[in-house]
Image 1 (cartoon, rainbow, N blue to C red):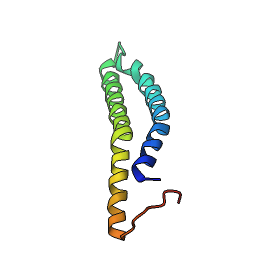
Image 2: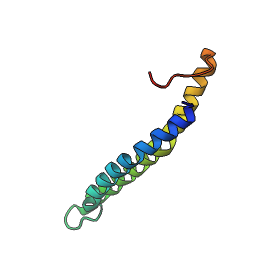
Image 3: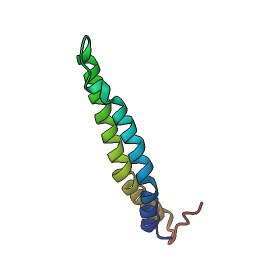
Length: 89
């Protein structure tokens, strides 16, 4: 299978689990982000920071990781002189 086709298939398989896990975590920290009362400012800061970090990490996992995989695999194939790369291993 071509490296790009294999990567696109893997992206389709990974998309739902990544989104569901990320959304569960982000929604889990929303009470911190919207907290009120004594010491709420510290909890709000933590909540928004963690939510933003998860959004950034999810974006990286969905878009950047597959692109880097394809690029690094193609570069390693050029260096090794391989015409075809077996992705089954």
